[in-house]
Amino acid sequence: MNFLYIKIFIDELQLCIIDYRENERRKIKNEEVIFPVSFNIGDRLNYIKKIVSVIIEQYNVVGYKLEIDDDIGVEIIEAVKMEGVLEELFSCKGVEIWK
Image (cartoon, rainbow, N blue to C red; front, side):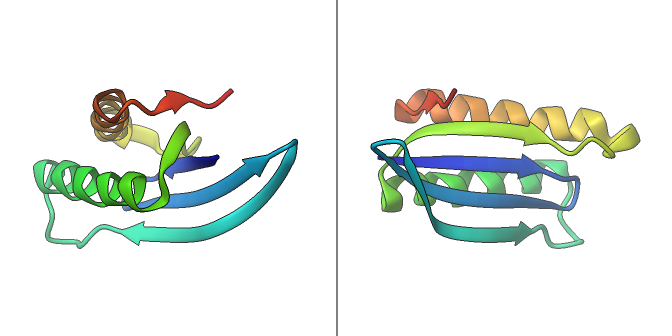
């Protein structure tokens, strides 16, 4: 079973796809998705949604975990918007929270 761990930063996402079987974890892919500087928040949200949607389909992701960077500061509102878009996407795709 494949799980997706995402850490949200204001200018990038860190993604880690993990294969978890019989209490054994193996990293399949570890990536950083850097947002183009010219993107406003709407463009970032659309970009995030498209990329993560492709990853869910490609790797048959069944669970996820989200985390927001502790040092995000005043951009917390934008980070929460990103988190909301991801939560909605996971819900629509039937991906559950990984505990």
